[in-house]
Image (cartoon, rainbow, N blue to C red; front, side, top):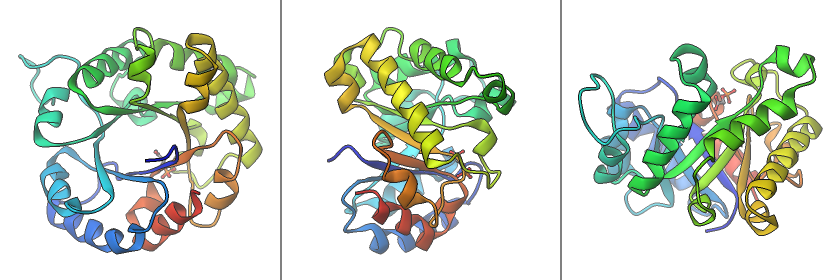
Amino acid sequence: MGKYVIAGNWKMNKTPAEATELIEAIKPLVKDATCDVVVGVPFVDLCAALEAVKGSNIGVAAQNCHWEKSGAYTGEISAEMLKAMGVGYVILGHSERRTYFGDTDVTVQKRMRAALDAGLTVILCVGEYLEQREQGVTGEVCAMQTKIALGGVSKEELARVIIAYEPVWAIGTGRTATAEQANEVCALIRETVAGLYDGDAAAAVTIQYGGSMNAANAAELLAQSDVDGGLIGGASLKPQDFATIVAAAK
Ligand code: PGA
């Protein structure tokens, strides 16, 4: 479909039965969406979610994947496994994975390679910590994360990459970036993509904002010239709020 993508990141919330219930509630509310709609669910909810979205306009994302196809990696899930079960998207490099689970720019790049090879669409998360913003290195941090993650990604493959700018200080804190701050960094990420590929690729790539986006602030954020959607945490667990955000993405 179009360039705008609204994706829910449910994080570690909802059992399979609850996932079905939440998707059933969301489905009718977003059926006329003019953007792509995705729900990012825990691994154990993927089966239920794939079943629940059948015949609807909602795509399903996993929240991580390993970089190897298979092997002795207890507790891990490969991109191939996700693809085989019918999952279309995977969120990679979320700041919670980077902060709590040791994900680095290098492991994110490896996961990106595996996900693209498996045929998945990637939602790549980048963003600065508060200290980095205060030190004035937001641009450098986001450009570096973007460049490393896209290392080895062809222009053709870039069509299956969505970039989510998520300032870490805005995630789950209720402290949203201003529309200007969000747009400024999304534009800078787009410039970075232009530098790696070309202007066409940069114009075509979807760049989301994420971090305390909600029903009240979504319209202003999504109206910005370089914000092409949202990655929504808390508000994606509330059907009406999520639907309001989807409706704001035009
Ligand atoms: P939040 O989370 O909307 O709850 O701030 C966003 C995210 O982590 O993707």
